[in-house]
Image 1 (cartoon, rainbow, N blue to C red):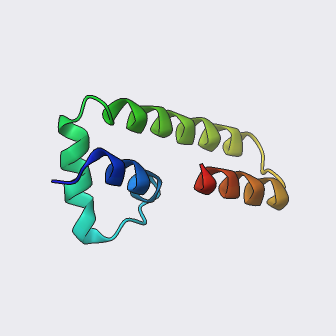
Image 2: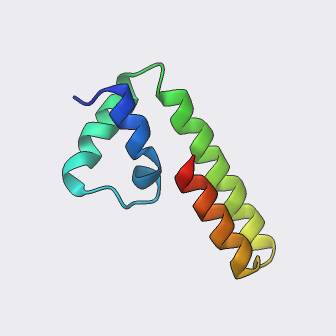
Image 3: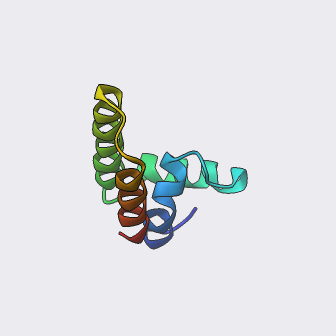
Length: 75
């Protein structure tokens, strides 16, 4: 099983479907049992849902999308 630090470092990749296959199950297992990391997962999932709804309302400018992705990855 992975530790909390590793789980949080890889969470965005997991949510974006970019996590290597060999790590997906380990992260999923960690989130299922960790009361500390699971709320972080839920917040980030809610954030992605909000961004998705905003995008559906109208296409943002490519510059905005790039700045947002950069900010998310650096956070």
